Amino acid sequence: MTPRRGAAAAILGLLGVLAQGGLRGQETPEPGAGDEPRADGRAREAVFERFKASVVTVEVHPLGGEARSTLGSGYVAAPGSLIVTNYHVVSSFIQRPERHRLQVKSVAGTAPAELVAFDLVNDLALLKAPVDAAPLRLAASSGGRGAPILAFGNPEGLGLSLVEGVMNGFAEKGFVDRMLLSMPLHSGMSGGPILNARHEVVGTNVSTSWRSNVLSFGVPVKAVHALIEAPRVAATGEALRLETRRQLAGLEGQTLERVIAPFSEPGRDLVAVGAARAPRPPDPFECWTSTQPPGAEGMSKTSFQCNLQFTPSLEDLGEVASVDLLVEHLVSRRSRYGFYGGLGQHAGWHHGVQPRARDNGMMSTPVCDSGRVRTDHLVWQLSHCSYSYVRHSDLGYFALVGTSVSRPDEAVFMALHGRGVGLSSFLRLAEAALRGVRLGDTTP
Image 1 (cartoon, rainbow, N blue to C red):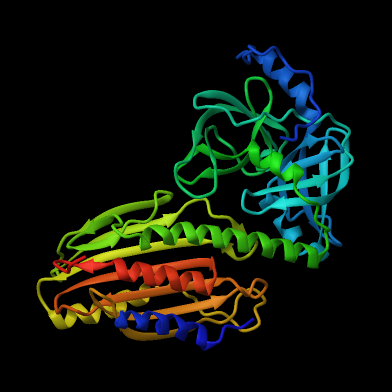
Image 2: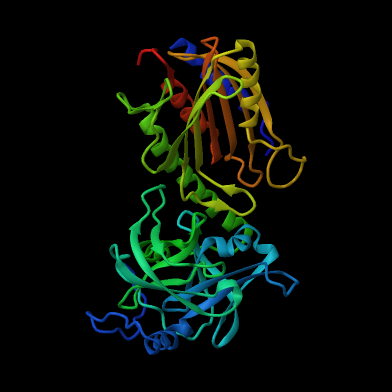
């Protein structure tokens, strides 16, 4: 669906109004309740032997070809040979089932697999394959901080591997729960099990941090319990599109409501950005501040930037229900004319919209518009660009950038980006954010 220019005009039109006012798997033999894993080679060998049949490699292959397109890990989690892996491991199949096939490899050999259910938000998928292995025991919860853990997976397709680490609780950022792990997970281990000292599954490998190769993340076991109990989905293109759309709509609605609420609350907390003030996003955002002292041009800049952590992604499209906010206070101590000339160029850098060929099959061509609006505190020069996702036309990418023009040598700049969000949600967020920004001695 190609967005009409009316979508872009709707944003400026609305903003212009501001001027007027527990299922558990079949249990494997369990060690004693007080047992701790022994830190010796023989103990690790025993763990390998005990669980190697229940941990598998998951592959996605294009139809008509033998070369795999995706590789990850998985584990037998419930009777009936139900296998848990990550959504992102099999996302190419979910998006285009008519073009791909699934298979799993275990110690017994290779077997075809079928998709049973998926959870896009928590990055999980449930498969069924004829793997003759006992399900791993699922814990009731993911445990506490400092607990020793083991993770299985197939890094780079080189073979079953075991990694030891520590459970550090849950990440404090993002609206999606993620276990915070001290352990070096590697590509191909996604979807493998995370075990506690009692050898129960407490989570599923999902990703690593770009900041450190020994900081990783897991999906808590409570999401695995929910997925096993979830309704089954037919592995047809239409059924998978409808289920994807349903999950995306729920994610987008819940996320944006939680993002917008703090911006709209009376007496909301404001953060200082130089001489400007801006609404503080909710705690799950990762935020940081930086200051650039006056340079040769005599302009100083203070920046406050936030983004939402652990947002899910769609194959080929990237993040969904993702929001980024940038607020800057800029002061010119020399040329007023050059100051505003530079701000126009500065705004253009922050759109982040690239030209796209028509009929590319993924995203529509961008539509842009600009105009001037007044809030209770400032007059803004705004520009807006957006495009929609072809297969999910009720979601799109929206970029709104604005520069205050109320003062000759001082300005507030704001850039707001929404990826995989709906137009109405973005309109409400943009209105709330613009209303909350003020400069210097403007009154609350």
